[in-house]
Image (cartoon, rainbow, N blue to C red; front, top):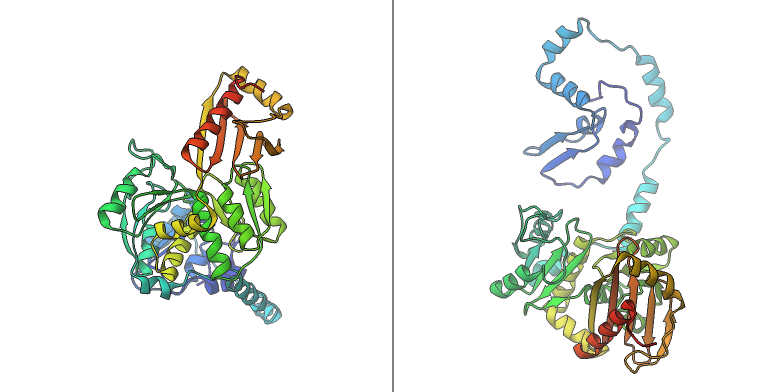
Length: 423
């Protein structure tokens, strides 16, 4: 059925692509940018499918309601019968346009997508009979991630569904202490993992079968292993200055070159667009796979974790333990230090010239002023002092081989930010 409205920028010529790329089965069809309604009126009819036409222009939406529900009243209001005699033009148009476009390039693009990043192994996941807890934190993934996993045969207990992310008991940030509810639920359910996404589902956190919080760096290391060992992919690993030593060690062991960028996923995404990148990740839980798109995707990371647990027949905690047994266990931490605005600005100005000879008795082997001050030591421990660019806050990161060593470095970093550490 053709649309009754000529529409500049209409999707008529793209219908064959849209219908070809649409999934074979779905229960809801939402035309978000409805316009002339060409897509809505030219899609295959499916019994039991809910159809929604939407457009920003309220008058346009109202016109479609009148055409559908009050046809005679609309004709009476118009006072005339609309006709359009373009038969001759349409005959010529069909003749000249026939064979002008083919779907060869589209099929090539779809084949490349499947080669570069195949979907998670549905058969392996279904055969593993996984049981997980999903916590979308009242955000965009609620209902969606849980349904995806259920379709793959995973037993899912979803918490914080149907709740807004701004409710008092929810902070949509997949880090401790906001994952406490997921930690308790995993233990109560005897689940193999808890999967947590933030408000817009682009960042991920996780909980293992013992109720232990799994840091995004550990998650990134596991996802990287899956991409290389099970999918035979290769490329650079892009991290920022606050990334854990664990990710770098695993990347090097897998033969992946590591590229370090300032804090912020925008720098990682820009590097992805240059090409040759396998994966990029940040301390805040954003993980992006270049073959998928140069952006973070928490839902995809959750699916890959399930695939990894299924293929290795191991719960999440066992996989993390195996990583630490092979590459060493470290303790990672971050503190946010609020200063007076004048003090924060002074630190931001002076920090590029700061080069400590030693911190906590350790001599820096590498000093970077790329984004704040990062000191790397010979034993792979490190300290990062980074003033925020938007507020009078200094973020202090450190990684040691024990909680005590980590905290000592964090204390020194905070003292350095306050100007009380002897240089």
